[in-house]
Each structure stands twice: as C-alpha cells, then as structure tokens.
Image (cartoon, rainbow, N blue to C red; front, side, top):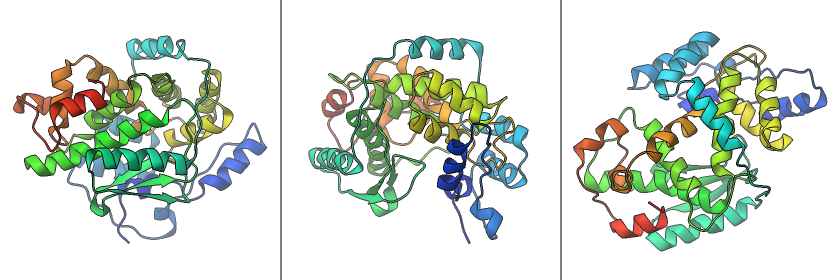
Amino acid sequence: MKADFLSLTTPTNLELEREKFFASNKYHPHFRYVWQDRKVAYYSANPLKQKLINLVLAQDQGAITSVASLLFETEINDTTTSEARQIIKTRHDLVHSGSSVEFARHLASAFELFKIPYSVEIVDESGFNARPNHHQNKVVVSSKIHYEMFSMEGGVRHDLTHIMRYLNGKYNNIKRSKSYLPTEEGLASYAQDNVKGVVDNGKVQHAIEYLGTSVGVKGSLRDIYNIMVESGMSQDLAWKRASRHKFGFVNTSEPGDIMKPAMYFANELKITKLSSEDKLRLYVGKISLDELDNYQEYTGLWERQALIDFFNL
C-alpha cells in the first residue's frame, strides 16, 4: 500500500496505549504503525523527508531526532528554551473549551466570509485537532478536538493560513517550496496566537511544546508528559501533546523526539521578528522564509487589508 508521512508516523494503537499509560505511572507506551503490519511504499521529493522515513522504518532513534531537526528547521538550544520558560510564566488562569461541532461552525463562518469553497468534515479520529485536505477542498476535524489553552478563534486563523497560502499559490502560479513547512507552521502559529481581542494561552502551549522537545530528545514520553503537566496542561491535554513527540517511535521509553511539535514555537519566533509587510507577503503561496525576497509585494485572491485585519498583521 502507498502511505503518506502522517500515516506512517501516526500510531494505530494510540487509544489503547493511552489507557495503559494512565493505568500505571510507570508504564511506557509501545506504539504500533501500519508499516509493522503490512508492506508500505513511500516516496518524497524532499531528500531529508525520505531519509527521515527510512530512519523511522529502521527505528534508528538517535538519527531520527537529528534528521528531523534539519527537516523541521528546529534546534534545541539554551536561548530558545529560556525564552519558552519565560513565556510559560505568563500563562493566564483560564481554560478554553468547545466541541468539534462548535469549531466546525467557526470554520464554516470563516469560509463564508472569505468565499472559500471548502467544507468541514468531523471524523472519529484522534492525534490532531484539524487538518486541511486541499485535494478534496475540505478540513477534517477530529471529534476528540481539544481546546484548553488554544482558543477556537486562534484555531480558525491557523487553518486559514494553510488554506489561503495554498489557494494564493495556485492563483499566483507559485510552486510549493520543498522547505515550506517550518515557515508555514511558524506563520500559522503567529496568526493563531495574535487574535485581536482574544485572550488565551496559545503561545504558552507552543512554548510548552518546545520545552517538551527539549526534554524528549534525552528522555521518555512520560518525561515529556510530566514537564507538560508541571507547566500547566491538564493530564488529558498533556497526554495528547506528549504522545505526538514520540510519533514514529515504537519504544517511547527511549530518548528521541520527532521534533515537529517544537517547530511551531521555534519558527513562530522567527515570524514575530518580521515586519507587518513581510508577514503579509508570506501569504502569496507556500513559500519558505528564505524565498521571501523573491516576492516584493503581496498578491492574491484576497485584498491585502482584509488579511491584515483578519490575521492582525
């Protein structure tokens, strides 16, 4: 069977291992994947991504972390870790909530506002909140969606960043960069964490994710979970987020991290330093930060002021 990166690195026994994890404070989950049960084929035009998949299949845990760090353009260093810790201290004493149905309504309203021909589908799957499917013109929302630190308003802006960059790329005939993802998630995270008039702990959660990776590269899933709970996450959210750090790993007691969860915070910091105009120009298509100088002005399906207002640029 053919498989994509997400299916290859998403455990098939996530819910079962969750039950075992909470039944014992000493249990370390062992994840299973589709490639353990059947032969899969995977090819990526990105050599680093292909290398990472090969390492996941071989379960070379140390090398997985090193190559993932390069692919997601995210390194763990003392300066960024210190900044993450400082942001975590700003956590507001509030908890957001909401159902998948409510989030779907928020998203559908945004589609209507910007005349985006996408639909929303709620699915009984876990391991994520929402994922755009551009080929089918829809966003898939998990029925187990969890908004505790994030706000739904922020989540909508995160997903719309993905969709608008995709649709503007088609409109502008801009080919997707092979290294677009770190910039993409950094910009989406910035949009998510800077909603005008909304107070949430979105940036705090992104900072906790980075701190979790700083622990995970040398520790277990349970070590990541513990630091997340200590940093203010509920046990349920901490499990959901900590487990993602070990996606692609079978034995979660061993050191190693897929690095992707830390990518959001690390690259959001880069986006934060840009001017408003630079941030806007990133919406021309799925380009990387390194390619920004190739696009001297914003062009796209939507008026520049509409994006500036909606994304609080």
